[in-house]
Amino acid sequence: MAKLKRSFFTSYGLCLAAASTLALAACGGSSSSSSPPPVDNSSSSSSSVSSSSSSEVSSSSEVSSSSSAGPIAVETDVQLYTQASFPIGVAVSAANEPFSIFNNNDGVERQDVITHHFNELTAGNIMKMSYLHPQEDNYTFGDADVLVNFAKSNGMKVHGHALVWHPDYQVPGFMKNYSDDWEAMLTEHVTTIVNYFDDTVVSWDVVNEAISDSPNQGDGWRKSLFYNALPPAAEGDIPEYIKVAFKAARDAKPEGLDLYYNDYDNTANTARLNKTLEIAAALKDEGTIDGVGFQMHIYMDYPSLNNFENAFQQVVDMGLKVKITELDIPVVNPYGSATPPPLPEYGETLMGQQKLRYCQVTQVYLDTVPEAQRGGITVWGLGDNESWLMNQFRNATGADYDDVWPLLFNADLSEKPALLGIAEALAGEPCTSDF
Ligand code: G3I
Image 1: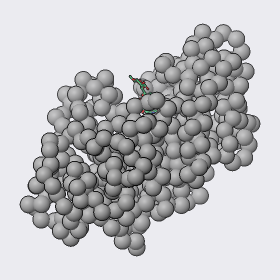
Image 2: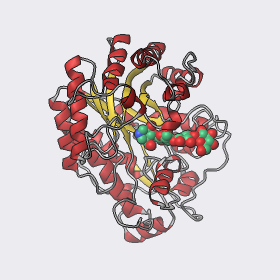
Image 3: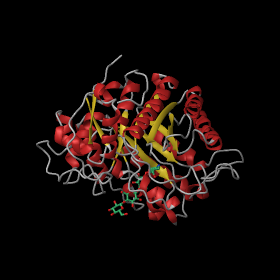
Image 4: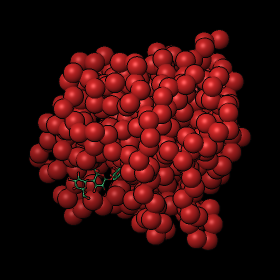
């Protein structure tokens, strides 16, 4: 069993006490960096905290002083992707998005962390429909080229996201009023994009979220623009647009490109899981799908590990790949009660529990999905402060959380115990909340 090196600091403490190259880079100490000091808006100021070995971590006085100092950083000798035989990915912002890995501020530091730990990238936004195909006769690949070339020059691969997805703001405007031949138009859209990229792009979410937000109601299909244009050909069929998109992608590149159907809440939610399996089965009959993407925007206590195992197993039994495409684990669940709960203290105890959760999810994946069917694990963002979840929770519930700490890196890009959780599972070590 591999023994992982870990010692911990507060986030600010890391920058004061950093000894490793990675830690220095994360604190703006690399020669390439011109960034301002890291910002940790979840903590007040921290006094200097020096490094301590894992054996020193257990005393409760250290625990409480660390807890009050804010999020903790661990210093590790881990390099995540080297421990896995399948892709370990991260969703990144690019172009001129906030938190872009190409910004002039801390972009280079972001790149350093990414290339150290990951061997696959997903564009969080810039490879969605309207970004790549804004007008019927106009494709804009410039921003994606920069990202894909960055991946390529660093020996990384790219998971494409997403060829067909319904949200209004990212559906190309011309499609909204399209009244001509939808099958031909959609085929051309998918074919052109798939053909454009070289073999750096190894997989695509061909269709994302085709299932209704209320999958128990009616026939369970999302009545999107695409559904309305190309509905099921007969009762009991999956919508035609899904078949058309997957066929176009398969025909465009019959070899070397894995095609995924991707959706959220498709583990514990039986109705959504069943619809997901219905899509997978229909496409498998046509020979146009390789795997199912489980977004896995999950919580600390929901869904259960059994839910994950059951869902993954059913896809495995179909002979398809399982990919965890958008993993994040916020430490608060605003949907779990009538009113969103207050933000918990994000100190050593909760960080340890989150580490355990990341480890267990990874372990279930390893235990359930045979090696040949592992499409990989991707986390949805780099530093906690860039997560989409704070906006999402605010919009959906009114919860006003500054941070929900869902990811593997602190706002200053230092490593969190959560990262050790994935590393421990990959190394075959038992999952614990210790670090
Ligand atoms: O880039 C602009 C910026 O210039 C502008 O100042 C700012 C003001 O609102 O908006 C920025 O664009 C935002 C973009 O993220 C980049 O930050 C968009 O408004 C915002 O809608 C967009 O949100 C993304 C969301 O998908 C919608 O595309 C999230 O970052 C992204 O994490 C999220 O990802 C989705 C997956 O694609 C599918 N599964 C669910 C997942 C979470 O919603």
